Length: 238
Image 1: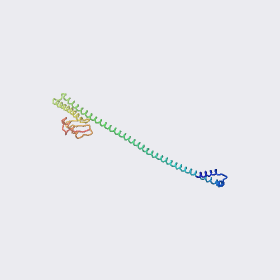
Image 2: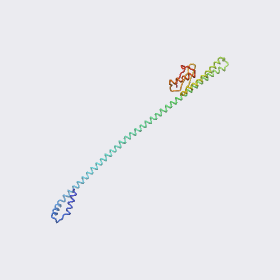
Image 3: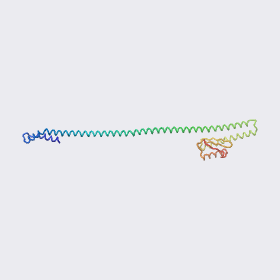
Image 4: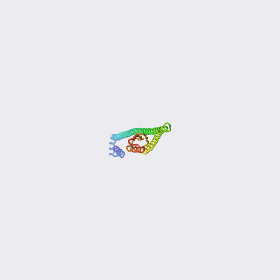
């Protein structure tokens, strides 16, 4: 507005004729107040310029503050986002470590169980093998003793007949034991050993446990093949 007024006065000065009385009067008035008008105009322009600068400065400062807040919020967001990631990473590492330790423990326990099973099986196999060997050696020694009696001249014919009868009984018992053991193993048992004497028959079966029906099956087989009474048959597992 001040700029427009100044421009109008300036144009008027250029257009006015010096010979015109009205124009001379106006020129005098203008010249008298020229300095004042231009000072006022300059002050208005300066004030407007300063106001413009101040407004821009405030707006710029506000923008900087907003930008700073945005950066701070963004930085905080990144920190907050990083923290859960770190926690998740640590939690995952702990979980992996626990899982690995658990797997290793399970492997050790499995290996230990397998080792124990293998050792127990080996011990059981050794027991059954050793017991059968002892039993067969005993029968062989008895038969050998009776055979010496038969071959000796110092024994009577009656004594030699008794010795021969005992050899026959032992051989029959050995055959019956072999057949009975094989029949029992066909019922699903890994191994079995039978120890027989005149009054009782002991049956030891390789098993973790025997069900009543399994015991009954074994008793029937032993009773039938070895001509024994049920009450004289003793069954156990090993």
